[in-house]
Amino acid sequence: MEQVSANRSHGGTQGVYRHASRETGTEMTFSVFVPDHAPGAKLPVLWYLSGLTCTHANVTEKGEYRAACAEHGIIFVAPDTSPRGDTVPDHEGYDFGQGAGFYVDATEAPWAANFRMRSYIESELPELVAAEFTMADMTRQGITGHSMGGHGALTIALRDPGRFRSVSAFSPIASPLNCPWGEKALGGYLGEDREARRDYDACALIADGARLPDLLVDQGTADQFLVEQLKTSLLVDACEAAGIPATIRMQEGYDHSYYFISTFMADHVAWHAKRLKA
Amino acid sequence: MEQVSANRSHGGTQGVYRHASRETGTEMTFSVFVPDHAPGAKLPVLWYLSGLTCTHANVTEKGEYRAACAEHGIIFVAPDTSPRGDTVPDHEGYDFGQGAGFYVDATEAPWAANFRMRSYIESELPELVAAEFTMADMTRQGITGHSMGGHGALTIALRDPGRFRSVSAFSPIASPLNCPWGEKALGGYLGEDREARRDYDACALIADGARLPDLLVDQGTADQFLVEQLKTSLLVDACEAAGIPATIRMQEGYDHSYYFISTFMADHVAWHAKRLKA
Image (cartoon, rainbow over all chains, first blue to last red; front, side, top):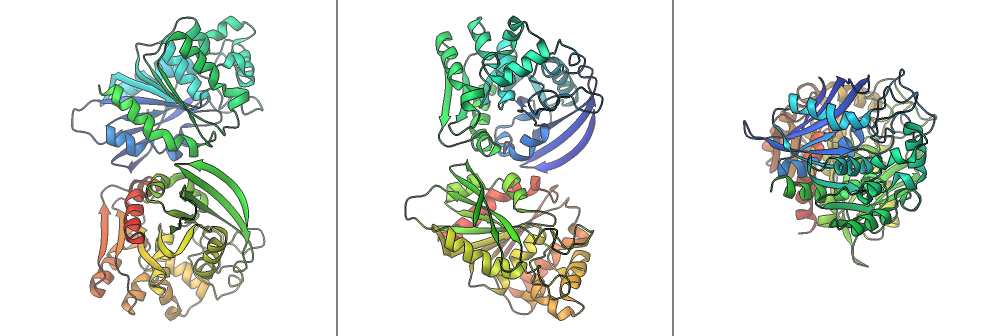
């Protein structure tokens, strides 16, 4: 792992790192904020999965998480959203291919070789973080994300409930089985078998029996993607039917941008901190 | 004035606006954050002048000022740093020409026609803000800025002490008369007469008798420009010699970036709020 940059910020260190990924077959870049801490202290880890088109940089620059993470003593890890580069397959749309990994392990050609973001987030990157950041307490992990990354956070947590003590999301894609982004991406990465997509659909996973201890979601009412793509109401219904105690807040007038995310970031960090430090 | 965008954020509205400037002869873009407020309420205005290469967008995206401005009920205005466009003279360096207006009214050709950032910030933009934002209380203004914008904030406030109730800066260029950035820019915009530059040098203005009621400055010790360009110690000496009660804080390990600015932004907004709402 190579350090790309390190900047002192909010009483901690904001780093950016690069490594050769065995899962994606490419170099991958991610950011980690480590608050100052006592020697030997172990800090919980909050994962943030980004949305379509984003790299680690969007939330690192605009997410406004550092003050809250420093206050609560939480490490914040922000991965990229897909493999990238000239040798990696791509697609002309913003919603498929590079920048749009959807946190799946692709099975279809030509995507299957590189587009392994599920395994990257579930296995490779946690192993790397645990090895390189000795202050990271991998027994206390939380996960959140935005839009496609909210979908990633929910589905990864639902498939492996033992790993995360806390789960939240900002304007998640509630059900890729039921929206155009999901049709295109899961169809492209996984093929025509719709059953295979249930592993990558929060509502389907819940319907199939997966559970979370609780859940915090913020969703802007002025989000341009709410009605056609995000469909928060499907997540509300799924949690209700399954008895998952979900706090799903519709935020009046907020849109899909980092102006929205940054507004509620401190709330989410505090919500995770309460559970990670309980 | 045309609204380019408006996003709900941190309990207020982050807007971006464009207008045809009489001073620069170009279209100019700036951002304004207006916290929610009671009908008829008048809110103080905090100006933020940006540094070399920046537009309004850098601080708007990375400055982390909105939470504090919403908490204190303060309008935050972020102008551009120069005229821009194909019809405007430019220079190949990042530190002169477009993106580097240095908050002067240029007198030298070919700059004099467009590079009138002093008059733009001192007269035209305040008039526009007063006319278009009826909740702005122009009797309660504060000013801050970063680097070249810190120089701008200090010199504008020193030349017109009646206008601002509060002044602060992040890593300001303390004395353009005594650093390469200042030599190049003030020499280029104002010509060889070094006396003419004293109006654009905080330390010279103080030596010549200008005063501020007090002052807050934050400066990172790991700032790559500290020794050669910023020279904070000259400002410390000038304030001491003049009896200006300045709080100039050297922040250990911080650099020149928005990772530094955002860390101390809430402190600055609170510092201005105390004086603007006294």
